[in-house]
Length: 180
Image: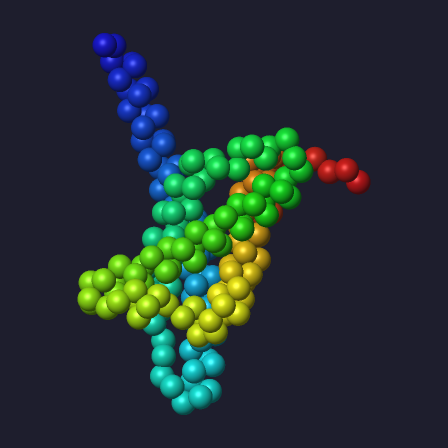
């Protein structure tokens, strides 16, 4: 095997690892802010009722786990059957799918923790937002709506190019064409 081919393969592997790590960090940060706001909201509500609560570790851990889920789902490209439709369909589909998966993983997390504690299934299933089915639907809608901006930027970046999107958002020296 030739040395140039080895270097090229090694460079591509390093670039891919860097790209995956960068994507994971972006997803993690977005989810950390989102879940951190959920925890902050719950803390304020409970403090108003005289209850002390502030598990920011929940936000960090869940953001990390669910960012990895997002990365895997993105790599699976489940929405590949949507490209010929307007971009909004892909954005809404991905947001809905991830909101659903996040809730499933939250329930699964509680089931696993319950089985470790030797609880029965009924005791392990979380009361999401402490509101039964209404709370579950409310959290699902909030997650769905909260994920739309993430997938909008992600899909727009794919369509127009990440450098072009960055230039449009942050003015990074790349000339952006305008239709004025």
